[in-house]
Image 1 (tube, rainbow, N blue to C red):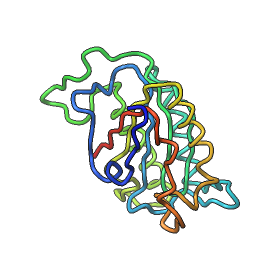
Image 2 (image 1 turned 120 degrees about the vertical axis):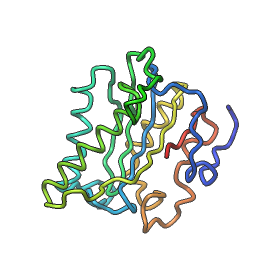
Image 3 (image 1 turned 90 degrees about the vertical axis):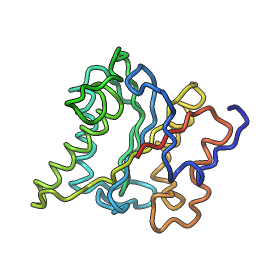
Image 4 (image 1 turned 120 degrees about the horizontal axis):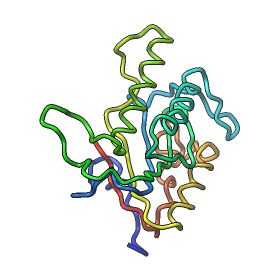
Length: 199
């Protein structure tokens, strides 16, 4: 895939999960999770810095807790933006046989990327709704976006993108007031990243 251009518009809005890929195996994953209707629920960006509100602090705390309660993962770069989060997840222990599901159990396999994201979203939703007295209200959109990171070059580029995300908020595709959203995600062009937006 070296030299290939990443067509964000083509791949950002529809699911192209990697067919046959086991998302419970060891590896590095770049995850983006957005709020429902892209609502700026977690704070604001002021002069290139994210100022989290009480809901944003809950998001950050629950992300960090994920690595404590899930021994199979490590967390790398992470940022909470007003209406989405970006994070790098490293699954350190392959979950052999996790792709099979019991007919009595729905949802993603245990110890998979999907299980991590689902648990995180659920915990954040419960805490935010408890705090604001809105039981049953959705916080997150149904889908999340994931990329399998294959090379150190891509890993370093994505880390830098996450760190720079607040300063690039004016160009962010998730920002309803973005001035030039087509410039966002240029960091992927020419790199090796397997793309899989999950619905």
